[in-house]
Amino acid sequence: MDMRNIIKKAIVTEKAAVLKEKHNKYTFVVDKDANKFQIKQAVESLFNVKVESVHTSNYLGKNKRIGMHAGYRSDWKKAIVKLGEGQEIQMVEEA
Image (cartoon, rainbow, N blue to C red):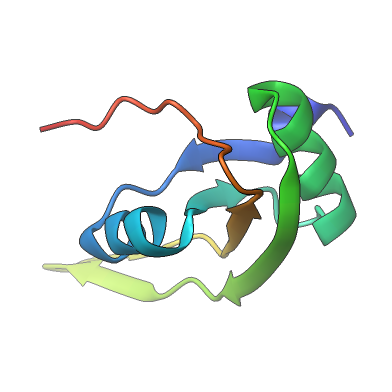
């Protein structure tokens, strides 16, 4: 699996911002099939930082309905990555 395909996007929410400021943790949407070791390698190689730990959560998609049209949200996986002391990832937060 290619390192660039493991990390899909960063999650920018209020909860993620609090984790980043207080605990130096960053939150990403990752590939569903990636394990913690692969996520750690991907973050270290893409951002040139040292990762201390990785926590993952799997989320099931939901059935959604708009009027008479029914659809389905995809399943996804979230990873919370804790960086070492003094490490930081430069991200562009959208306003």
